[in-house]
Amino acid sequence: MQITNFEATGLEKVTAWINKNGIKNLNKDAVKEVLRTVNISFIAEEITRAESTLLCELKDSYVQQSQRYVTMDEESYSLPDLADDDKKRAKKLVNKAFALYDRMSELKAGDFKGRPQVDNYKHGIPIEDAR
Image 1 (cartoon, rainbow, N blue to C red):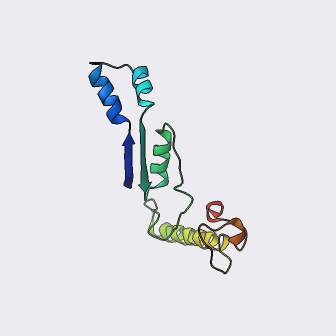
Image 2: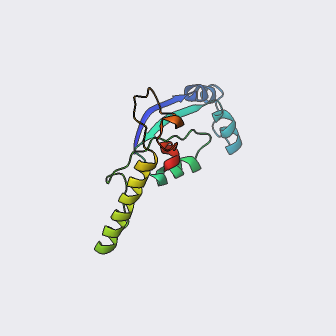
Image 3: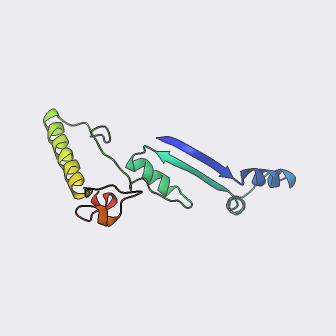
């Protein structure tokens, strides 16, 4: 996982308020109220579905776009420890799924500016719906 574009606004104001008022102890409700003025944002890149789930479960509010623009190849997933024969069958099945995904979300011929619209897809299935 790589965290980029980290930004925290408002923390310095909270710290200044705590210091100015000589506050030594804050209860849970007071901390929640004070932190309402804080905005923390970041981008988590190259995360697994499990990491994405954990981030979402621990959230206050969030925007999740990690699944919209997924590209997959053999380096993009991991399989559990399997017997060699089972591992071969699993890879074959995953590769079939990737091939189906590629066919379902195939673009029509032509140059498109920006993000493709539903009409730009050969079968009318955008990449986020094909997954």
